[in-house]
Amino acid sequence: MAQPIIRVERLTIGYGTRALLTDMSFEVQRGEVFAILGGSGSGKSTLLKHMIGLFRPLAGHIWLDGIDIAAAEGVMRLSALRRIGVAYQSGALFGSMTLAQNVRLALEEYTDLPDEAMDLIARMKLDLVGLKDFAESLPAEVSGGMQKRAAIARAMALDPAILFLDEPSAGLDPVTSAGLDQLILRLKRGLGVTFVVVTHELPSIFTIADRVIMLDRSARGIVAEGRPQDLRDRSDNPVVRQFFNRQAGALETA
Image (tube, rainbow, N blue to C red):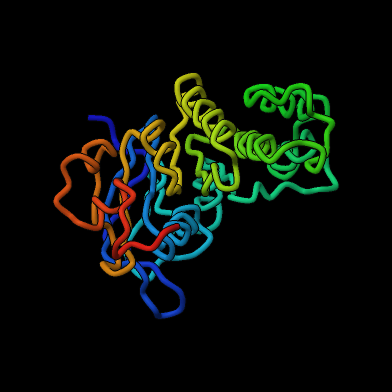
């Protein structure tokens, strides 16, 4: 059996000495769309920040394509970080730069390619997300959905094996959100990229996710793992049922 591209082992995370989520273990298989679910305050974004190396865990390990991001230093840590791309919830594009210039940033920082090559790669990445004709536009000149697509193009600039998306559908109308879902599936099929997606949007979860984990604040960890359809139809956990069936209860709305 193929080795997982991400392996999380006995992970405890939090801030300072305060643990928010404890003793979590799960794997992400190469080439799948893996979603992290949960209500508001359940720790979804906190887990993502630890998985991309922004924070070090209180205990445990996060292996990214064979490298423990929690322990790696120097060249080894940079090697692990080169394997990932991140698109944040807000898009986080630089407003004074064109979309093409935003995509070029990672190339300028981490490669010594000539300008012509960087320009070509930036335009190719924008073409992959359907923004070929907007390369010279500023972020304020395009829609919110286009900004999210441009952020994904920037995250792909260095051809990472894993793309982390934080609430990609947040703030988008249903039609635009559905288009973004189809883009994720197209990139998965065409490029073989592994996606880790933080979301609470049920339509997106059922459309794109091969497998999910669900976090719960009260349990301080993972309360469910598996295919979203299976968790919706077969889970005996009331918190999981409430989430997948949009029922009021112990889980806060997100």
